[in-house]
Image 1: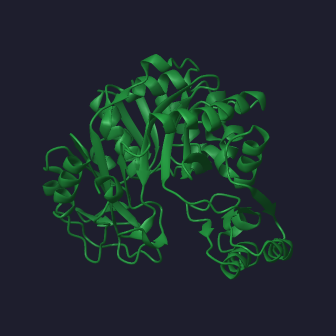
Image 2: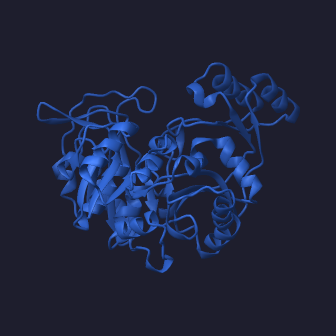
Image 3: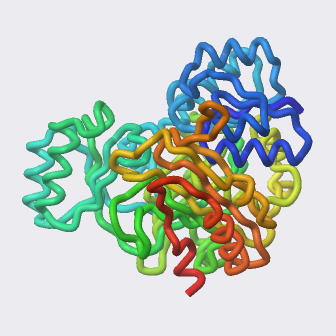
Length: 420
């Protein structure tokens, strides 16, 4: 099968390796310096819908898998399907679940999905007045896409009001913050649940737990994700059953009732609050770094399941299974997430990849004069598979220690709760 992976991060590199291991012919657009070693790359940006459409017309791919959310929200899947291309990823209508926080929360409320109480505002004065009247802190979310950074979990009324002003008035996230969601604060562990959906049927693909904070012990500012692990021991069969009943099943029914065709993966951000699961948000693509963990644990050809979804013929009984454990550790550039430094040479890539059970996934990298250099905030994701989490962690950190990048940093405690 000839496959195109759209995107250029560690998520896409993990998908490339999964396709390559199943003997598929793999292309990627735009890819990165590491992906170029494992696939044919095309220098087309992931959100350049016109050029991607032209590429698919020339290359006649059997399947296109869209990695990031922006091209899905821009309608790439719709354009390709109109051309008869088989696509894994929702069209523009279904992608609203991630493209608009207000839309997704209203969808949840309409269909009885378990989620936190919320209000939507596009006027800073009215939002501020509401917060002052309530006299408590809220989670403040930019309505549109903000590269995973448009959320402020305020700890006071003052912080909430400051976040409102930052988003609506100062436009800290551009047009994405012109409208905001004020959400009730919940507390508890977060879990990333990935569910395949072909518009009518669904199948649980797997769970992972992300680490958003930049520092050990969940300290410091939020990032795009500093690492992940799976399985998640705390997310047991009882919690899964409750999540299916109160979140996943009403979501899939709601998509059908609202006429929102969805052929792709629903990555649902969950919080386990007082022992019960609540949906924090929908994502309409694989998580990053969660995807690396899922692909490392997968047994067999993941892409057979993706094809079934894209064709609208998902059979839950035949979905790929998962074994063992995996841990992903993100190596980030100096000063990430504030102002990441780029252009530094990366050493030790081959030595890290030589650790048994390890894959070195590239994200923010490029080639310069024959050397691989940093080209973004999250530079590499080191993912290791082991018999259990402790074994996987040992392998992952042995590999990370062989990487050398000036000023780089990483968390040294991925999966610390589970390991404790």
